[in-house]
Length: 226
Image (cartoon, rainbow, N blue to C red; front, side, top):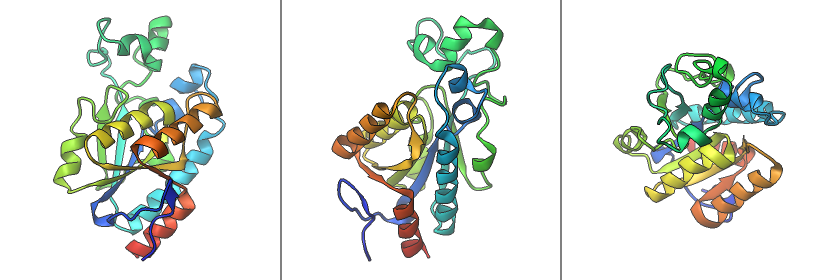
């Protein structure tokens, strides 16, 4: 059986111990009127990312690979956002916007709200694992690690927005916890210019894992899972 055509070298993964981890594919980061749009980020690439992830999700489901959705969100009173003693209060995009524009408080990344919700095209299905976080990394202060370990997961395929912030943060923590991280290169985009996206690809391929294109991943899932 051929290996997955990944960079910097092909690898083999055990699908029965793999999961597709979709990071922050929420209206906040992928939709007009959401947090990143309000912050002035270029979201022109987001529809293509959504389409790519949807295609890989369908292939993963067909191959029996579980889907994990990680999404960031705060309680309406922001009691889990850290407060002024936390750097999150000063650096996280939604927090910065709400601090600068009080009329936005309770509207950005608030649990149950539109901004918080995962985009309709990628909405969780019965059986999917959904983990809510309050920091960039999906492993910080959540049950993600224990949920994966109880399922015997070892290989994590990452997709989502933003490549250089929450996706890379979660991927790095996965590496530190001895998971095998694989980034879906065309299933992510950076918050910022193309150079930031390329920097994330360089970091992953050089230090933390592997990258793969959606066409190659779908072919691999069909060959091994079908």
